[in-house]
Image (cartoon, rainbow over all chains, first blue to last red; front, side, top):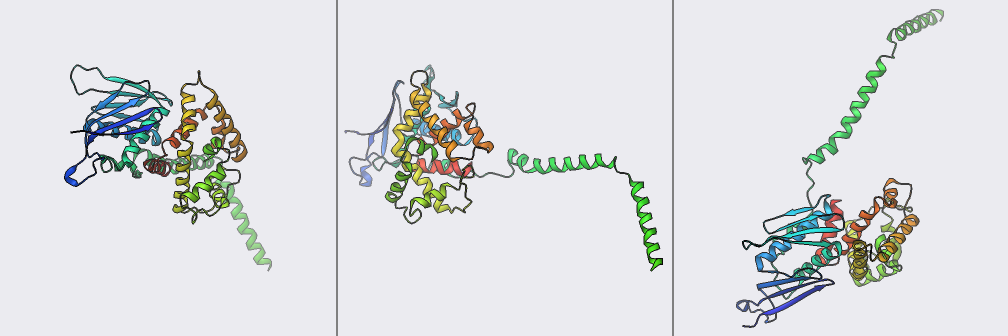
Length: 204
Length: 153
């Protein structure tokens, strides 16, 4: 049986999906519902290919890493098959670990432009009507707003530290001023004032 | 959007045309509305505090995403120029110089945030991140990514 072959291109990256339509669902013969193989070609990098599980892991790794890259300071993704970390703000270090024994991990160094191409290729795959995509449900959590918990360590310090510091500084300043405050002098003048008031009443 | 304007000199006109194409006429009926919404940025010299609704915020995001889609080849070229700066510095240098020029013209240079943006010790990484965010926002999923990034920031 002839397999279908659908291509997704974005500048330096080409993603090829090979598979069959699901005839039991009366699908068009041009569609792919059963992915048997995929190939990712990146210019100046070795060819990457695998089965559906590898594709899922690959997409999850890149989507999660990109999410971290845009929202956190130290983006890093680690899994059984793929590790991605930032070498500097221009280069990303990708380590692909083979499931076969005695195969050394493949190390790729990709730039921001190449990363954008890969992600856009996956986005094209996701929005394609010809390929019954595998990740729309699995990775939907990546596109949900992160709940900034008040009980997060950083948030607690952000919320509590400023008022505590201000209260502490007020306490320090006011306790320092106590030494310069002459309480007896104040008492004397208040007595004088009261005497003066008596005098003024008498004169009235 | 200022980064997009750096790449496309005629960005204001393009944004208005795109808003028409995306059926955003009800939210963004004219160029002045877009300009007013863009002035909601406190870093702007002409900062004008107007309450911005979620629909207007979303319309601006859609415009940014669509505009990035058109300008993707240029954005990519600038990013690549930064990665291979020793051999191909022209695109990056050109972008950086024009971006700084635009920031000095439009933003309030007395604020710390803008001073940091203009400081060559810090702005390299910030400019790269801005361009990468734009490059990653050119699809429907990319639009969600951009929305998420802005809401989380």
